Length: 164
Image (cartoon, rainbow, N blue to C red):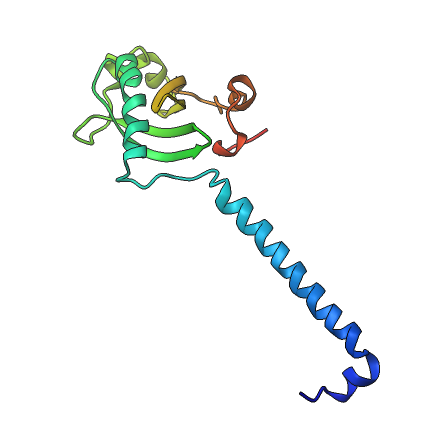
């Protein structure tokens, strides 16, 4: 193979091979680092709407929220984020038929009536022995309730939409 004249005159053959090899190795290393950080960690990820993982997370959260609101609930999801056995959920509670929650029968009736309720549910869950367990919930927050949860519970900071 004949090399262009500028390569022949400016870069000796041994040096040009070394440069090509070095550039190729560097590109491979960068690709491996990028691909490894994204896929090996898989962190955070959002489980598909129909996945067993998402259903298990939401079912675990549903029980304490239904108890706190005094009525059956389903969730309109804002965020479900999972990483290394931790899950964060931000959702709007609804009745099972999809209609709005009846806040008047809950302990939050006054807060809702006085526009002092964010109308959202926030939950932190940890997977223990294959089961999702609720570690913390906040209903009706008017601020960012989860800002300290990574430090407080040891959860990965990546699962939270807002980080300090």
